[in-house]
Image (cartoon, rainbow, N blue to C red; front, side):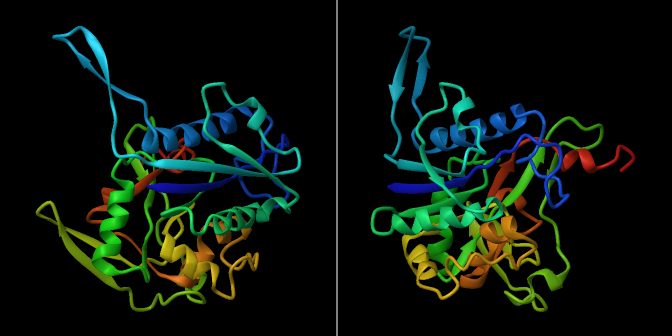
Length: 286
């Protein structure tokens, strides 16, 4: 299997973003962003191209083992000199730099162009914000299963979560409901749809959500081709919340019926958001 990943990455060493919002792409200390991007790139390698061994206590040696062949190409899109690629640890490898002159908030659309350029050569096309980690080794198997069950016109989006040190909580899913007005112009929200199927003898539920955002998406070759042929592809719209959220979500929301695992089984398909910024928003009294 050949998989193409495109990651927008931007960092400017200033205290506050121009729009006043909290962004990891801005800050006096670059180390958290270096750690996030390093973790993101390392997680892709571990998922797709891991070097794995099994320790044999009988033979007193480690034997290399191999899994299904997955060739992952990772393209990191930047704009100007506002990035931290030169500061990544030496062990973070397996990526290609794609410099651009994009307006920083719209850098994600350069990733869309990079994905479209790969049509015909890959089985999956993946967009990841630079602080998204992929912990599930069954990620692409689950996507294949979902499409076989429900078709290419439906897209499965993951639930994003954080974990960290908190006196009362161990895990938080960070993309809860939005006001219906945020997504109503782009998808039906007044009559949520539900799908279900048995997985390993357990019923699993999927629903359309008022918040389809996950900071990422994973498209099959057929889905990527369908999206790239749509009139809104590369329109650089910021109509869904803002430019950053639109790059991750608006295009696929316009092109597919988007589902997420329901609250009954949120961990069926999930990705991790680096750090614990959202978890830290929950006060200790809750």
